[in-house]
Length: 551
Image (cartoon, rainbow, N blue to C red):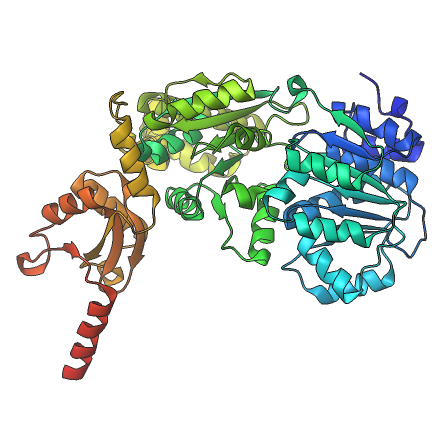
């Protein structure tokens, strides 16, 4: 493998690379950078997410573009606003002493600031197709003098329906530009786009053996759909470090999983299409700074997220196809660091797992979920490690007085055990974990039907009215725990809980609803039912109006 110096980059750029901690080029960088620096051919590059393709075209751009030009010299198209921000930040970090301005342009951001910056003059524009079209119509973006046009993650842009926008942008530019197209896959539509708009282009492919899954340990756990959340908590608790991206199939499921993780005390947030742009940026910023350790996202919302030091990627819902699997797990095991990709597989999904392994040409090994005793042991080992660190650093001096008083009355083992019991009673409590059912190999049809029931919002579920609320000192978390404990059902089945002053609502699958109603039949005031099926919204409104009329 060549060094960055051997690729023909300048000393200033090499200094910028060294500051970022890059030691040697990735394959796409080694193959692409010299060609961009030495000739003027258009390029089609096939490379997965996380292989360093931003640097593959960004470093040569820094070398080739002129300073002090008030015209846009390079235009970079990306599928998502997150990727626009990340590509712009990455290219900015390569600039070193060279005066080149980079501007990300995307929807959901105030257009006034973009207009002002464009008027002042920008060298490199990184944008999403929709917002770029908007600026072209306003004539605020001039693209008739660009030297380079880059399509990044072209397959994703086509999947999102941006083909017409891309063609309009390409046709709005000058003919003598250089076009670079990067894509993780090469479907017929990409090849047709290249044939139409790239002249005398060269194709660069990263071999599958060099893709980003090399450093990723791939495992799967076979679980029933109703036990997935409990399995997730066990995995988080057994790992020494868990800085992870969790994938769910729907935005409802992503929000639900993130909420339940928060209820269990984990640092987690959801990212999906219903979240505002400002909120998305705030969540991503906290995640990058590790103030949030777990991000639960849908495939669409996760597009463009580019973080090098994730320890885990977890497929809470199995990916729709092998390509999506590679896209997901390519977000861990980066920059020479090892990562772990975990997939939950229900009995009905086993065939899909085999298909992913066969087409992606990768091995995903089966593991057993950790037992409760293993979790408690792991927590105690971690506690011992934490205490040894405090002892080494000597950060216990302020508490020596109370320690001396206790040791005067009891022996040291009793004192330490009492402190641990007081401080860590809940952490070491086995009852914190719910039992996970064994997989019934003949239950794939039943499991498939159950998954269909549970995965929808209200279809297949019963809305319950519960005659307790805030005034009875019930929070959402406490109410879920109460129902789980009394009815002996998995808390993951209790969804969309709303707690009001005098009453609450919750959604549960039909079968569990009947069980809950039966358990709470005589537990309300004056032996009345504590839980009943909620009336339809219209009927509730009529009842409320009648009560108000009587007052």
